[in-house]
Image (cartoon, rainbow, N blue to C red; front, side, top):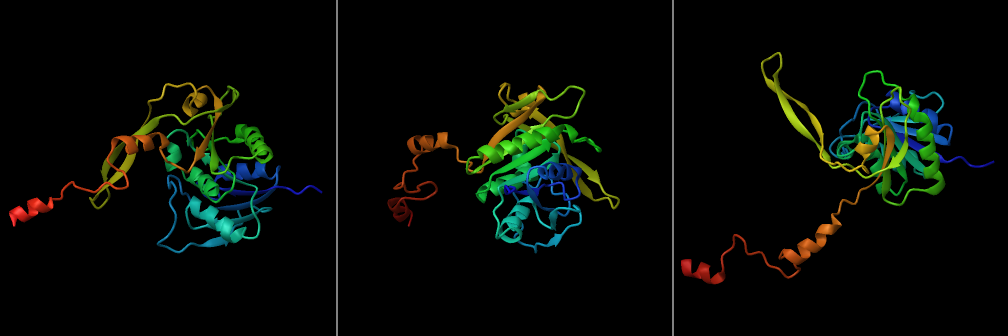
Length: 277
């Protein structure tokens, strides 16, 4: 009998979120599933980890037929605990995170708790995929993502994902138009232009609510934003090595940062100091 792949599932919306239940349903068709997910929403946590507070991990009843645990920490905490505690004697063949309620394309990948779980898996030497749906509605429909989640997952298990890489997969919002297909893309150059709405609480004290607009500066047709706008599923390979390799030669050649360089800014020469004395 062929051994089923072991798949670890996590997310950032919490273990009761509809997206993770859709993801688990699909993963059960493919392999043995273990869930370690936050016990509540952890959206926008980026790659935060818990170092100043205790972490709690409890068995969960969110899935009747799947080994599952809920964690008091962040998505990255969940993956760390899964690898080193829950699955300490077993190595997952794949880690999947999501399906996130909302887009994680472009710059959002840096803030994403969904992708932090996938990136943490990559750091731990595990192949990983983060799945997100570009829909912020209250009762969103994940059903149109299922066949693509399964396809991409099976491809990842068959062909592998390069070491240190996690795939960032985003799905367009469900509409009358069928998904056009899948495009492998680069991350669009875009950002959130934030505003802080200052308000008053019932006691008259001010507080702030983050608002803003997403601005895409990238007009390329090979980006995740372009693919999603054309109703394609976008797939962006991401890495945790954030070195800007093209700048290394600039710093070495144009700046005075060679190994023997001595700081002089703000300091006085010996002769100048003696003259003032």
